Image: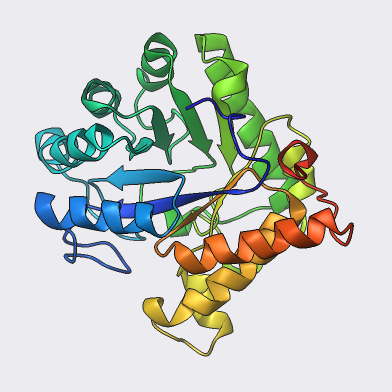
Length: 285
């Protein structure tokens, strides 16, 4: 999937966690059959991309062995791709990315932005698939200790620019590169809100933006410590704003309500009520 092959609106990336320990749905879709069924359900709800991950990136999560990550994700990707789904693999490992693409994935969603595996960006360039490079300062076990910034927007923009430049230098095609500000990764709640308010500064890096806020802790803090699944309505509210701003895509655990919110934004855009400050190339029809 090329990053700009989109239908004139914000895309919806549906999450399939093939893990026992995800922060919001750990264990629900840990088997191949359950994960495939979940992916098909998200497609039925309107997902444009299914993002399959086999390693939790929640704060404090321990790493899994590469063989286990492969065991979890490859059969799921193979079945969903055979159904005709556009599939992304959520991994920081080049060997998992390679196996996932062989199974039918057409995008690699790397939360480390290439820092987790020095072979990743060259592998993605060789494979010729889409690449999402997220802002990252360290693995899940330690990332919450790495949230010190003098200016969170300027520093995230600078660090994302380094990830962009590294990917391009390795041969990743410019029209297949997407950046993700990494909401919730090595960032406090206040820093997350600041970044969301100033996404235009990150869009100035020249790449489309994927934003993942679904069920994240900073929403729970806003809502008086509400648990993850109780944050879905707030997640949809943010998707509405993000779509109005024109971001390339949103990553979410639920799909239908987000797709509906985006449809409303698109209708209002046709009426001239909404412009799209962050990604005008994604707005309008």
